[in-house]
Length: 416
Image 1 (cartoon, one colour):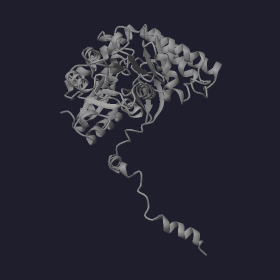
Image 2 (spheres, one colour; image 1 turned 180 degrees about the horizontal axis):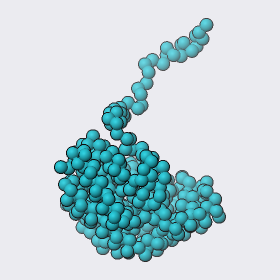
Image 3 (cartoon, rainbow, N blue to C red; image 1 turned 135 degrees about the horizontal axis):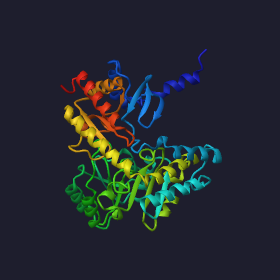
Image 4 (cartoon, rainbow, N blue to C red; image 1 turned 45 degrees about the horizontal axis):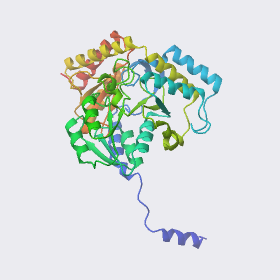
């Protein structure tokens, strides 16, 4: 016998609620069509073993890595690995607490001091990820009544930081100094203003004209935050990034960075000379309300950062790799994201997602891993293959890479 109470409840519910996943249906369909064509899932590649910063075993075969952010090759540095082992033995696997409670160990203060020394700045604040660094700093210093002026191609973590703080967002055309100046002039003079820029933009690998943009921002009374995630370690005389290379590092209020690229581990940070900076430790929600980094991670980061201070030879070799790969790909007939190499990132533009996926698969079969990037992560709706060079790629490996691009490009019809 049916329970009348249950029947009555069901009847009262009315029509079923909409599927909350419905908004993803176009992407689900696109992914299913891509996999149905026989392509390996480009967004779910498994590395069975990593042998070095430049080589891994993928699908059972030796594969050159050209799609990591391991720019300075620090992941297997013996001193870095040893520091991690030592901290793991002495302090255990994690802190199980926030930095403002029980989550600050000696290693956390040591890595913040290493950052202060690296950047020659007074203050450093470490987050559990680079994403959280942008999320936390931006949302805390710019609130509802303030304005954030940002490059339209800014990273998702920057946009999310703006949303979390509920600031007024004013985007401007990518790397356009005049557009930035016009936006700033439209903002009330007495309003709080933060200009957010990136040193190197991660999709095309192009560099921002920071010298001009910082000057325009300061003339308008704005504070300036620069995300140097993709430039720390190798751009600039001391590896401090594009702001250093263009001579404006002392005019920038905040520099955001990450440990997951040149430093070779995980975590994020902000450095600054602002005299009131330390109060952020008590008011920044993504810092206060999350567990701190494990002792082994901060130990590896501190060791790596201090070694990066003395890495001029590695920086020079990385630039040589970038120049050689960029020139070689252009000579083969590929369309690239920049006319000249500007960073360790070289973007190879594809005509569409299907061609890009086929080219990605062909390169993987050749023994080369790159990133397949698609909208909305990419600018202007483009599909591209993103190559991220490492200071430990040998001259021979760069030659191998060019040979693989030539073979895969001809097999897929991307080049003649």
